[in-house]
Amino acid sequence: MFLKTNIGVFEMATKIKDERKLTEIRNYKVVKANELIQKSRYNLQVQEQKIILYLISKLKPENIEIKDHLFEIKEFCKICGLDDTSGANYKYIKQTLKDLRDKSIWVKLENGAETTLAWIDKVTIFENSGTVIVKIDDMMKPYLLQLKEHFTQYELLYTLGMKSQYSIRLYELLKSYEFQHEKLFKIEELKIRLSAETYNRFPDFKRRVLTPAIQEINNLSDLTVIYDLIKESKKYIEIKFIIKIKKDIRDRVKTWAKIDEIINPEKKSVRFRK
Image: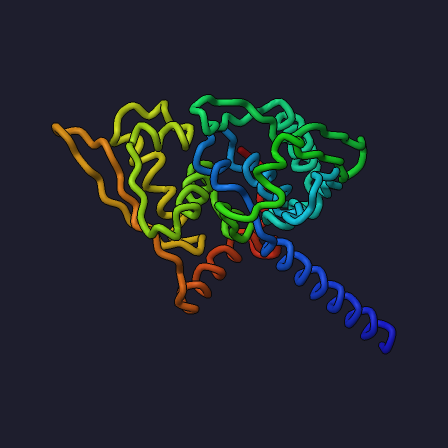
């Protein structure tokens, strides 16, 4: 009986320690130069974005160089609330890391030209293992390290519960303009920033992109956002966002509870999917 009690206490202590570690990692800061957020365009699926943000959150912004990162698939699954015992998840995450190696991001330069950058420089996969060595491309260094001004930071946690690729991208954009409290976009320009140009009709863009993104941002992030549409000649041409940070602790607690319902593995286990 004494031995069983000790084992139970040990298991409980281990569980508490693991939960604290997960909470700590979920609260890691994602730090990016505003130029990278506001003047870039790319098309990544929701889980691809989460992988990139997870990798960036592991960087130390004060570092001078970008180092190799040991990507533990089990940890990533737990962070996102995915089934960390699923072989399908492991296989898909490895494939997604390979795919990210071949994807690029367009960034507008000060002279008005655009250039391409790679998200990831190399991926080294160990077969029959849950670990992958990943290296963010060195060309990303000016946008991620040694940032003294004009940068945005937010907790990784606020993106983990989101299901739409547009939610994460719009959240990051609006977060970078948070200090202005409002931001006016031309609708066509916003479509480009969100990689949503295929929605030619505004009602489709609103229904498939804007409405679900705003709903997730308000429910699952530290921001509260409303917007007004500006019409010209019977056509919506601009959108004005009003951006507020959730300062009331009661609002924050409600948000954390909603995120927890989605990403707590003991409450909900899901398959990795696009």
